[in-house]
Length: 594
Image (cartoon, rainbow, N blue to C red; front, side, top):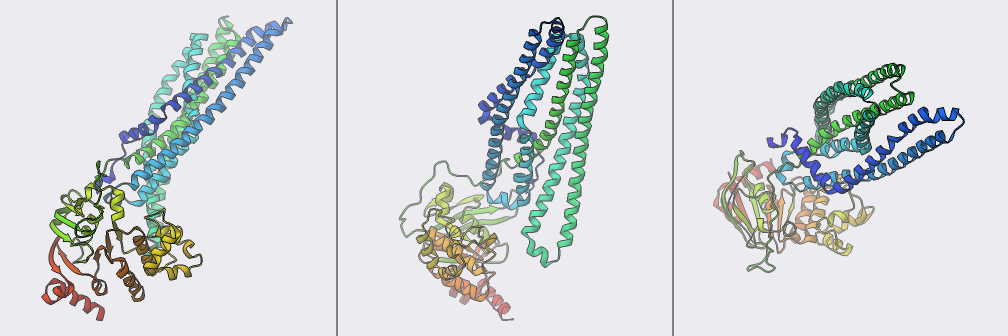
């Protein structure tokens, strides 16, 4: 889906910033006010030093020490007040920064997890992880520098220039004139660093995506001896990232060096003009000293602002990438006014009806289903068979409402799936796939995935009902055993039995099994089939399978071809008819006996 390869957008970044900052506007206003007071207090000491030099020192030379002591004490008090206010500001702004990071991570993760299956099937997981890790880290690095760097620089610059103009306009004019090249340099830096850091974020995204995919597919990598090829590709991606980082570093170094150069020129110009004006009797030495102190303090925050701008460029590029996750995608929307499933519908629970269903993947994809009309009776087991791409899995995904049909509707017990609350739908329809995914955590936690509030007795009863209690009890920690990544310590059959125990615990009306036994050996398959007879009892089930042993438990077989049902009947009826299903059976038998 090309729409997910979107170019970073400033509009997306700005929308994300508004979403994060608007709820915290009062706290940000308070932080701004605190920074303003801190910087106003910080402007006082150079004025007091100037007064001490021009008035306090001469009077002290005449034996009157009170003015000098007063100016000195006032300067110390102003410095202590400024330090206290800075401490308060850093504590307060640090809390805001951490809240912003928490909100950003939470919103991005929750949003991505709530996206439809189409999003996850077309958006590489490595790219999502890069958004939620390295791009969020770029924002964290900016916030770690603190809002202090931004506020102090801005307020210091404005305040210092105002005081300079008040003290001596000719001297202030020198500083203001040199702000012209500083402005030009800043504009160059903004444009150049934005491009540089966009390249950096894109490059690091490629590194993260490749790394995640390589480890997720480690079995295939080792089976086809792709270790060296993957390492070579990582070197190429990492080299691109290194070049991008070096380019960003050059931009930052050029800007920081330029700021230092302009600052030194300001000092030299002020010192030259100040000495000349002192010689003419137009300027006091204390005023010149204050000016030099202010210039030093002026270009220090500008340098801080350069560092902040550097971090902001990286964070801005990261926010553009994160903001791209929030671009609206076609979603399986939650109904505004959900309709509840009937508790005891006529004929029993679990009736599924397809009414004129059409479906295609994407706007330009091939039509997969064309006007499917289908009724699945409650409590019956139906097998879907057909060639690859015929539409079997699509029917299953529509039943689980992982997608919505392009036209027509799918009903469960008379209710359109689009009218059901998501929580009720997930409790009514469960799917077991070829790979029964287990999360890191205990066996009990994995069984209780659909019902986290289930008691240990209920979890054990669910395991016993599918014949899983025996092997679970034999594990080192029993139900508290950590299954590790994807249940790697368990066999395929054991993982499927745990998945079936999940189903028994949630007791859905409809169960979908998508090639649930295709990767198992015969003993594991036999154990799972024994469990299936208990799991399927009394509920509607749809099985997608090719193995004859799995199809044998079905009450009804639907042969799907080019998105339509071409044969429908019991396994025995279709075998006797000698049609497509019978031909498939002969082909399967030939393969298994060869």
